[in-house]
Length: 517
Image (cartoon, rainbow, N blue to C red; front, side):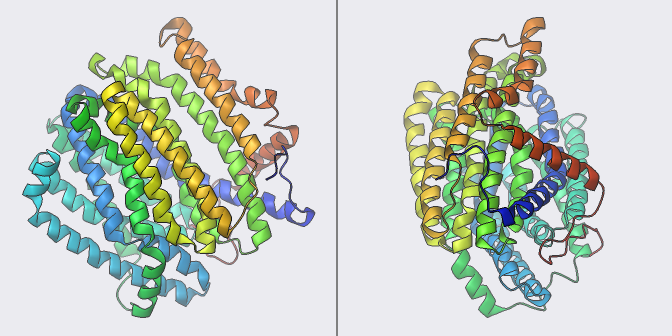
């Protein structure tokens, strides 16, 4: 492993590396607009919800959404991930169309089976998770549309058409906000209004997308042999996905039983605040898979992955510092007092999200080498660590204990995934550089927690200043070098010059970004 500060790449790859990083940053920025709006709206609506809904009711919504996420993983059978891989293995338009239509048909069938089974089992599901039947019913229909919406948005990502992706995402967000406010405020539907509003925009936009892509999706090119190959590749990812779900969301059920329904409400609010980091992680992750798979040259891929991970760590840690610093005044000023305990766990949840994002980058080596058979083992080990620790830490420390378990669980996931990826596609990541970045971030977060008042004329300006000067800390420990700063300035100029323009094709892949199919 190399621990140098500057990214060491062959001379012939330097220009290509810069081009690749600009493409990745540009796609992440455009994709991020949709995610930015969705996450911002979630944070914006949170004060409204905390004043109109009890903590226990808010916790019920969180349990239903967690259940939807788990069942969606199982019912998709890993076919969306397989669609990415098989769309790029044979780069002809016919092969890509074949992969898309085979995936579309299969996912439509499995999601409909899930819908019917959910309707039959509403009563035992409701009693099993101690949630109102009305919320479960809405969640069952929301599960169906979520699965199929995810597949259609994945098609836009495969084709690298981020403009259309963002337009649909923003439309979804606008409808979700409008319907949610109407249902929760004037109609006073409480938890029912929250969960109805959450799925309303998805149903509307899914209908629009289905009509727009009527020539792309359908049943004409369903390929059974291809489906078998896709399932062989994807099925190991399903238990891994369920393990990752448990790592991320099983603590909701444990908090309900080991602490209280009210504690779950506070933890759920904290998780929504922590979604601020997902503005960046989600944008990057959406662009990362098709971008990373589009690089065919192994040497170029390694240098690009190494550089992307180093710069990604810097950006994520800066976001960790900023959100952690600004959360206490936000919670104190916007939430009722009974919700103030949410702020204590936010930095830990953000840390867990960053570790998960790091796992998604590292895991690309597994996808590239096809060594997916070990992925369930990696996810199972991390899940066992997290869930097991929750039984000890939640009774002792409440929701903070759940946050500590999250960080330890995701750290285990990242470490094991790195070992697995290195066996199939080794990449010499700059771990010393990343470690120094993390160390500076932890120091800044500690200062925000223990040395600065939560609010007031002194506390708030100091917290803003702390968030702004984080890059100076990176310079002080030699992480952010003059060469890095020059490269970042060039990248920023390139992104500004391309703003509003269609994305350039990557290796022959259509990236027109137009909304017309």
